[in-house]
Amino acid sequence: MDAISVTNLTKTFAGGWSLFRGRGHEVRAVRDVTLALRPGETLAVVGESGSGKSTLARMMVGLEKPTSGDMRIAGKDAAALRAEGPRAFGRVIQYVFQDPVSSLNPRKTIDAILDPPLRLLKGYDKVRRRARMKELMDAVQMPANTLERYPHEFSGGQAQRIAIARALAAEPRIIVLDEPVSALDVSVQAQTLLLLEDLRAEFKMSYLFISHDLAVVESISDRVAVMYSGEIVETASAEQLFRTPRHEYTKRLLSSAPRLKPPGRGRLEGG
Ligand SMILES: Nc1ncnc2c1ncn2[C@@H]1O[C@H](COP(=O)(O)OP(=O)(O)OP(=O)(O)O)[C@@H](O)[C@H]1O
Image 1 (cartoon, protein in one colour):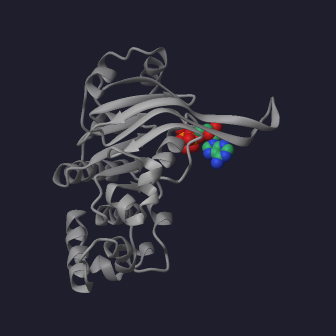
Image 2 (tube, rainbow, N blue to C red):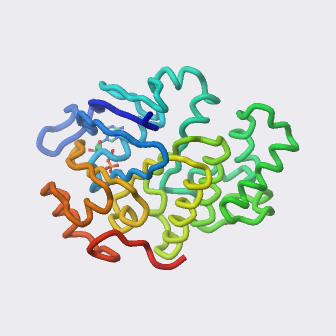
């Protein structure tokens, strides 16, 4: 059973604006997308700005409603799974966004940020939640005293690790990561990607990894789906896609972007 499977998924926004067509025309942000995230894999969705990647991710985690098409998460209809409530939905799928600092409430200490997802788990009393918070800090390589501090006390990379810990707190099977390292320095990117890869293996999760950055995608993904103008134009193993891209758009994307170890699959240096 696929972790996520979408069939002919479309999202149309009303009230877009275009220089040529004026106000009020429709924007088809995602067009007829058919895609499967397999259990245990990292599937990257790559494409340039405006290609519809974020809209696709936001539909998967329930932040946007599809205009049409079918979406199944862990074998269940996504809308039906959401209707079961935050506990059921959160146990299956979590997300991590680009800007870690703004995704953490500045007025709350880290333990208060981690508490709500842990409260959703059955049988987690206060003592067990506290112990779990320490384990989560350990898993993302942050010291235990992190828990008493506020988000602004951390660097971008540290804040993103805390955001990852919050996603892990729900013990999800799937994490959707939307440009999770784009706001970080390159050396911190490499460390964060290695951490994500370790966590995926340790907790047996699947990742849907949204990125415009081919070097990042090459270093972390098993398979890659290339998105262009709302459509998936090519899906292939990372190795195949970087070595022998088939679609014209993929070829252009590869030839225009800086790569770390062309050709073939590489790993980011550093960390
Ligand atoms: N809420 C919205 N209302 C109207 N149009 C939207 C909305 N959200 C996205 N769009 C439009 O949908 C298209 C796809 O946007 P989306 O953010 O999904 O692309 P993206 O590939 O993630 O780009 P970026 O990396 O810049 O966020 C764009 O034309 C965008 O302007």
